[in-house]
Image 1 (cartoon, rainbow, N blue to C red):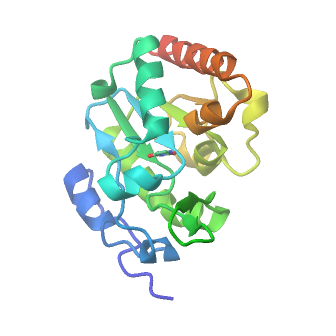
Image 2: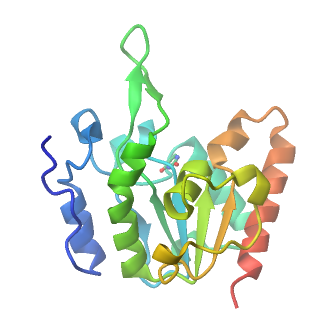
Length: 209
Ligand code: URA
C-alpha cells in the first residue's frame, strides 16, 4: 500500500507537524476526505482534549469540533469553567470516515476502526509531545482506547482519574475519559446526559493543581 508521509517528523513544532500531517497516507481515509483535520489550540495548553474523528463540518472547515458536537462542547467547557482558548483540541483519527446515503448526497459518519486508530496514533503522540499537557481529556471510547488500549471500558471508568499504560505514561501524566459530545446529542434524556458530561468536565478540572 501507498503509505507515504505516514510517519510524523521528529519535531515538537506544531506547525511543522500540521503541515506533514496534511500529506499523510498512513491509511486509506485520505482518499475520500476533503483534508486532514489536525489539532488546534495553544502549544502551552494545560489540557489536551481528544475526540474521535472530524465530522462533516470539520472535514470541510479543516478545524476540529466546529459542528454540532463542537457547539455542545463549547457550551459545556464554558459551564465547567474551562477556557477553550487555553485548551488544545484534537482527534484520535484525523480524517473524516463516512459513507454516502442512498441518494449519494449526505455524508454519514462511520466509526473509525482499530486499524485507522492505530495508523493515526503516531500523530496524536506527536501532538502530546509538542504540547506536554498536564491532563488529557478523552471524549468517547475511540479516543480513550487510542491512548489507553482497546480493553478500556468507558462506561466503567468515566469521570475518574486514570492511569495511562507505561508506553504513554510520560506523555499522559493524568487522564479522564467521558462520553463523546455526539452521544449527548443522541441521548434519550439529553438534559441528564449533558449534566453528567459537565460534571465529568468539572471533576477533570479539579485534577489540575
Ligand atoms: N466529533 C469529533 O470527535 N471530533 C470532531 O472534531 C467533531 C466531531
